[in-house]
Amino acid sequence: MNPAALLTRLVGTASVSGTEGPIADLVQDLIAAEGFEVHRSANNLWFSIGAKAGNESGARLLLNSHLDTVPPCAGWEGDPFTPAWHGPRLQGLGANDAKGCVAAILLAAFELAKQPLAGEVVVALTAEEETGGQGIATILDQLGPLDGAVVGEPTGLRVCAAQRGMLLLKCTARGQSGHVANAQMLGAENAIHKAARDISRVAAMSFPTHPLLGSQSAQVTQVQGGLRRNQVPDACEFFIDLRTSPEQDHEALVAEFQRQLESEVIAHSKRYLPKGTDANHPIVRAALLAAGKAGPVGSGTTSDWAFLGGIPAVKVGPGDTFRSHAPNEYLTLPELEAGAAFYAKVATDFFRLQAPR
Image: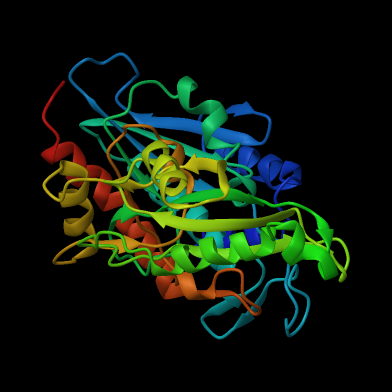
């Protein structure tokens, strides 16, 4: 299959998250045309190559990426839904995040199918990654036991062995309402003042530095309070966004914030769990060999890795994370070809390094 033609077809099929039907149809037909049995649930697709499921001695490796994109932002030169080649560079919505990874995984799978494998490769191309991980999370139990996973995201083929999670906290400061002219005599407690004290506490918090992910800080991202300019506010709400490290437990963090703040603290979202895989695990070693890298790195962005449970995984793919969600997103043909070569090699290296079950 021609790499440039495949990427062009994928990018030319609009798939803003929640509307992946047409691209799922396209990819399903492409896979079936190569002779594979394709499984589908909603707009999530998967198929396998190599050793058959149930072979107790064969390792099973998941190659996963997502079919959906974010909506186009402002600033595009030309139609973001129309792929345009500029020399070796294909510009179009999703070219970098993550249809380049999808194309590279498909190309690798079709090549791997032509050779004997010491294990089974399960390819899962899923929906709704950009809007909450409702793709891979809905089919994971149908994929069977997995010994390792590679999540396709644009990393420049750097091997990410750690990924930050996301903890969103909703905090509500409570006060006592009253006329501002009488506030001092009434002893009315100003909820915005209470929230301000807590926001200062949040800004001063420190957290352990992670060897791959570095330092982190909690960020207050929204504040809302008060009804009228002449009324002491009785409530002020603010949100905290903390990008967590693998050694941090979300439930314990919620309890710690509540201990330190005057405001009421509840977890608004804690689904995106932080992830990390030991550098000595076969999936990390295989990925480093396949990518020709000396050591792993960390990733500050989330991905479907957050929903893979305890499966040892890495995040690797062609492209550049800084092109994602930006105008004039693109991928180059050499990046695509290098990505396909990586995904093919990581499978064979993993099967060689993984101990038999």
